[in-house]
Length: 237
Image (cartoon, rainbow, N blue to C red):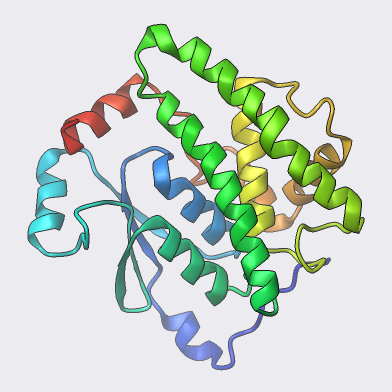
């Protein structure tokens, strides 16, 4: 209804192009925002899951991990690493990055903020059990006092459906991802943010996102002890 994607000028090669291939663990981590962005753009992708140290070492030996780190994404004949670079490329490729530099820099600011919040949640899974409860309480407090008030204010000031330029963008996708992650820690976290509540409903009902939120999609569940163990064993930390 309000989210038309930019058509390819030469659709034929796009149709024939190989699906993007994602190399990461069978869990959220730093790859989940990439999955969200591709899914929101309506792009099908393949995944190869890292389960062993040997798989990781082979990627390194083959020279495919620029700085020895995953995520790794194969797309458009390129091998890409570094999460922020991958997300920026995808946002630009699928017309989710604003109409000019001023909109792009705002999208960058907003996504950097939500990424900071999500990184705290990501790292919480690796904390010692005795620290987890306190850490989660701190994350929820920061979401309610530092992050969510900012986005509530943005939506109130411009009175539009989307965060930037009244058009669906990467900023909207990642804010919804962050909201849902915090709600997994505290279901009532949006009780004081009526505009964010409405935003969550609105963005969740965009067809590509609605599909991604359904059971059986490539969206990953919150990290469990098995995921933490595999990551620790593979990366040896």
